Amino acid sequence: MAHVQRHPLAAQAAELLLHRIRGGEWQLGHKLPGETTLAAQLGVGRSTLREAIRELSGQGVLESRQGAGVFVTALDITEEWDTLLRRADIVAVIEARLAIEAECAALAAHRRTPADLRAMWRTLTARAEASASVADLVDADTAFHRTVVTAAHNDILTGMFDAFIPRSRRAMVDMLKIRPLPDERADHRAHELLLDAVRRRDAATAASASRIHLTSLKEALS
Image (cartoon, rainbow, N blue to C red; front, side, top):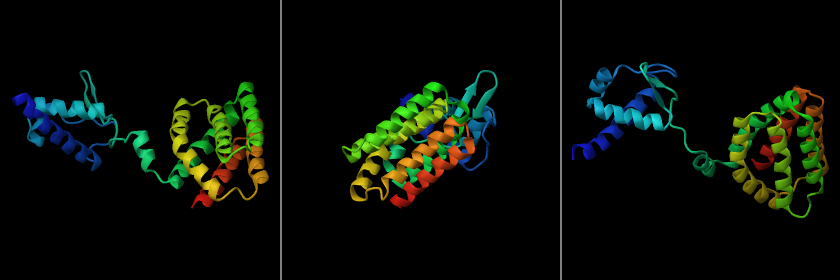
């Protein structure tokens, strides 16, 4: 029975530790006090403390390093992407895309390969021809933007962009059915300018083109 009863205590101890970390008691990368000290502070046994540390380690907040101690590796528990994005307002998603895609455009200008440029041209052409439905246009647009993101050659940024796609797609399809783009030609031209800046390895112009395009989308959605 003692083992069964320890679980709620460990959960409480984990919550207390997390509260202290959130409160700034230990900074990112800092080492926690020794096991005996910390267990006494929390009013639990060492086995319960170890279980609490295991729980927070599994959530990425702490890390036990053999022979060195326990270190703070995050200042809070990060929600799963899908949970976070389900709750996110589309404007928040566009703002996050702005942060990611403007940086990706700048990186792509430095790092793009001939194959990246070919993919960008191919998806831009497909985007120009996608007029069968709103969903087709949104998918073609997303495919183009993804080629810019992948041309940055940063797997983390690509993964973050991919996490936004389902939420962004639904919202864009819904919005464009109600409010079509006022000037499709100007919108397409904005994408051509982005590609051209990446082709010319002009990072500042590429980032600016991405930012201007997504800001106009955000304003249309607001």
